[in-house]
Length: 269
Length: 269
DNA sequence: CGCCCGTTTGAAATAATTCAACACCGGTGG
DNA sequence: CCACCGGTGTTGAATTATTTCAAACGGGCG
Image (cartoon, rainbow over the protein chains, first blue to last red):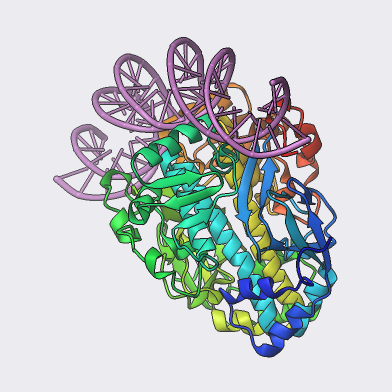
């Protein structure tokens, strides 16, 4: 029962173009990458830790997360992914993935052999740079998560996660303030390093303060500016080329210089 | 007062070869990259957040860290770097760095123009892959830090940091068990998301338990296996091609399958 | 209808922070 | 030479955010 038109990698091209400039020829080369389409139900593993890497997955629809298991069995979510996101683009350059990728909702996925990824990168230096740039941005996002998780209160962590998902979804949003939060509260906890119980209380508090409203898996941001303040969120680390949507354009007072305001935690020298 | 021979990028080549295979021609091309040497005292900024990227820094000697300021002014250290490490290799592909790099000790640094980095990557696809691989490993390390910081007790976080530094230094270590920990306890706290007070107590406990010994900035690992257990450390995420030194080769029981032992935190599906 | 998953609520336990003071140590200047 | 000094490490006691455990609730779905 095929429920979509013949799948294409157009969403991947769209995703790459959010941060890289591609020529028509390069876009064509990307669109003609060989791939195997699949439809996976919620909870399927797309990449398993330790797997010998054979292919890269592109999400054509649905959402997924990367995660890793801590020693005590707790699951730490490392990133949330939506349609268009490539998963494990550069995996072919490493011996094994050190984390797993699992679908959250039912997903359409395109599996591209790593061989083809490396080939196209060798033929088109600009595509190689776009792929490299993707990895740089992934690293940047991971570092931002480090700051959020290591330094932040529960409120900040949850707010920061919501802000990130909002900005990353903003390229595809119609109604600008309602985003797709495909996670259960337990999964939000796994992403923010909190207990589901505490996530619950935190989100209740944020609802009570009028910052957000939730309805099933849809989350509406009522006070974008305040939410950014609570999450100490500044979108630079996402390295989007395009400006954000107008209604999300509010800027924050936070900046490196401004942040140095707290004196007793002075920087080195 | 030049205190070393004419500086070369040999340490960079050595660093890259820990994870990538390079031909003689490629090594030669890397060694003939143009660069400006500098000597910077402890605490100098090599890269400042928001800087328009102009050059990549290679540490020829000394140590440095990347860091970011949280909204409340607290400093979060994101990575520790030693001689040979390239800092901001791919920065030329982004509009601005989203974090700063600061020297810890006096450092010799080679500044390579980004233009030259991109050029050599375009001419040698295998070097492009090596650079890309560096970014992938950086992202992998950042993700491991996420797990350690979000999920770990103070003991785990500190032990994990020590283990990582030990393995990363092991390619250059003579005495295998004594490593260079160029950080003050406050800086360890900034790296692990803990208070210097708590770092102090935690390290005392680890010394008391006979896991480590410290002498100024030198740290001796007395019980490598136990330290790895405490830090839930498994070196895979560093993606070294070469096996670790013999005395560090002890393997851990932790693995994805083993970790699933704790039942009530079951994985999705 | 009953079941399961996710959410909500409460109370007790705990890890880590905060604040404050003191000890140590190498360097610097009187 | 000693006195002082700033940075680092150490210690103690009170406070707090978050976890843990446990139980109940609600709503969609077979």
